[in-house]
Image (cartoon, rainbow, N blue to C red; front, side, top):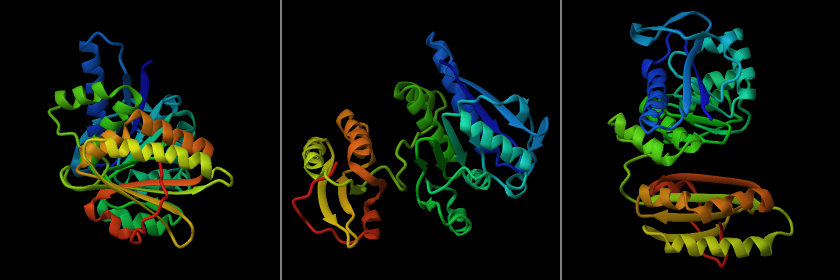
Length: 313
């Protein structure tokens, strides 16, 4: 089924925050068409006016008015100078309505400020351009603002850092909504070096994944069995370095898994057994749960682990 993509346009938006995702989804459709497949995406720009002037003066003709876009499957807000659009009641009202209908609402760079201004974000993990991380955390203290992330996928809401990270995020959404094969073919058609991992830094070098969770009462035995199976799967993966476990001072269970590089970590994150364990964990075991991924020094943000007989999925 064709996914309808609506990209908000406004004066002083960053041109590539808008055009990068636009290029990804339209290229994906062109690639699919060449293969004889149904079009995966139908992309349209939407704004309160028929023409907008992007940052640095680029003029863009807009496809539709906001009132004509009510049923998009994916809504995307670019970044740029967002102060005016954050106060635009017509845009914010449209965004709230469109997000209720959409499967995914995404932002690039400072577009996350518009999502927050519309009241769409409560306590989600989000990211933005590195220069705006502190401001976002100050203005919206309920959000968990992550620094140094290419993008953050929270399910319904997906946010990214600036410009090139928005392209990476859009390719990630092509993979998520259609297929990995199409995402790879799209990146190749664009001659774009897709950084598939949301982790910061180069793709080479150790990548640390930190799992933090709290269990529901009475599930410890069933959880331990699944966690031990997942530890065995991780240890058998190519590029696995080590795994350690500890309990924080306030009783949170923490598992730290290291892989040799981002490719190995990504293969583990996509392993069917791992995905199934995460699904089961959310449905049966966890009262709270969080995954963060980072480069080798990421673990310094956490207490030094204490080895125990605990395992974790």
